[in-house]
Length: 180
Ligand SMILES: [Cu+2]
Image (spheres, rainbow, N blue to C red):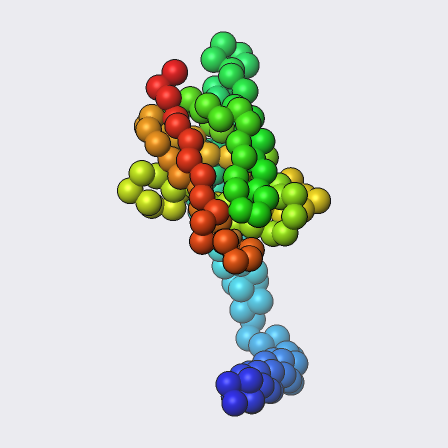
């Protein structure tokens, strides 16, 4: 039913677009009769183009300065603070998680390299209040990279987020994030 409605709306919209094209094509010659109107239209177009450039350029400069996601490294080489992310291998198997190394330091990005030895699992990282912090799929034959920076030391939990068999609900893990 919904698809039917969508199809009818699409047909009507396509018809409207086609009609407006025909209307413009039919009237294309008319405006040439008014002196100066074409030149004025071109001038307006130039002004609008410059406005568009200035606005889009400004918005780009203002919003693209910072990546909206965590970078894989900390600092930059020439700042002398470059420290690569902590790489942690995360392997899911029915019905447990294995992290190596199991020790993680707060304040530095962690690059989880997530895979599975059997079926697809959901690798979900939770804080001690059981708020989901980050997640990706653990798939056999693939390594999914998940980068996350733990801001506070403490105990964190892993839960499987994808049904993987009878003991799926018990597929939990735990790890500690230390301050240094
Ligand atoms: Cu599961």
